[in-house]
Every structure is written in structure tokens, then in C-alpha cells.
Amino acid sequence: MGKKILIWLAGGVLTVILLGALGVVAFFEFAKHAVAKNLRAPELTRSFTNGADFAYTTFDGETRHVSELKGKVVFVNFWGTWCAPCVAEMPAIQKLYENFKHDPSVQFVIASRLDSPARVKSYAERNHYDLPFDTIRDEDIPASMQFNQYPSTFIYAKDGSLAFHHIQAANWADQSVILFINKLKDQ
Image 1 (cartoon, rainbow, N blue to C red):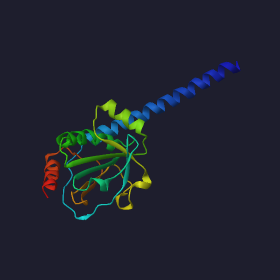
Image 2: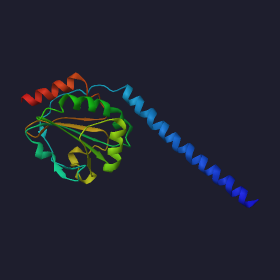
Image 3: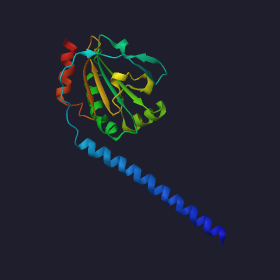
Image 4: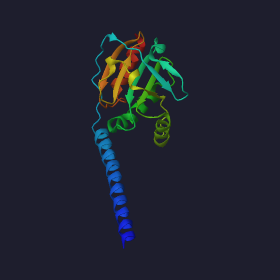
């Protein structure tokens, strides 16, 4: 009789765990779709602040610095696969990237925090993204860029200054963003 109770309890515990996991996944998907449905273009106003340098790691394990990209317009996005708004805006970032991926004067740094390269690669493959994904450690994000909200997006001008920053998800594929980046290219 005791063995049957243990089997019944184990089955009950596994059922509760499974239902809980399904609930978390369902909530994440619901939140992602709710955010994606309401994405708006960011209000792009040019700021003139010093752009902070930071290190990020490529999937090849190379450490790079954003300062190495001076002379180019740089679109930087800090995000994570665990962040529903980040995942919701990624299709718009992919579309923006497609506009500029063959333009050597524009670079993208799509740096995931709290994710392993393997997890980001898997995410990219599942969603058919060819963005230049990287990873970043929290200690490598400069204090001036730590808003403790994700996604966080920064656009650097060619002179290395920070031209724009935006916290929260946005529609980066909007024509206004393309025009803003093209203006920065011409400066």
C-alpha cells in the first residue's frame, strides 16, 4: 500500500511541475505577443553625449570593444532570451539589420546578457535570425548604460558619440529609424 501512495504522490508532483512549467511558457508567449502587438517607433531625437566604450564577446570567443567601430554608425541592443519584450522586438531589429547588413558604414552589436552563446545560437536558429549576436557580462556594461531595464538600445554616431538611447521594446524597422541612421551616416 505504501508503494502505491508514493507512486501516486510522485505522479501528482510531476503533474504539478509540468503544469507550472506550461503556465510559465504560456505566460511568456502571451507577454511576448502583447508587447509585439503594441510596438511603436522610438521618438528619435539626436543627443550629443560621450559614447561609453564596452567589451562584448563574439560567438567565436573574441573580445571586442565598441570603440573599435568608431567611424561607423553602431546600433547596440542589450537583450536576453529570457526577456519577453526583448524577444518581441527582435523581428523588427532583424528587419532593420536587413536594410543595412551590406552597408559597411553601419554595424550591429546585439549583445545578450545572462545567456550562453549556445542558448543564443539556438534561439537565432529557431527563429531564422542572421543578426550578429554577441554576449556581454553585466560587469562589462558601463554604469552610464545600466538602466536595469531590457531591452536597452543605443545608437552611436560615427564620431563615437552616443546619438540616441531607448529603453524598452520598439519598432526598429520603422522608416524613421532607417532615416535617422542614414542621417548619421552622412554626418
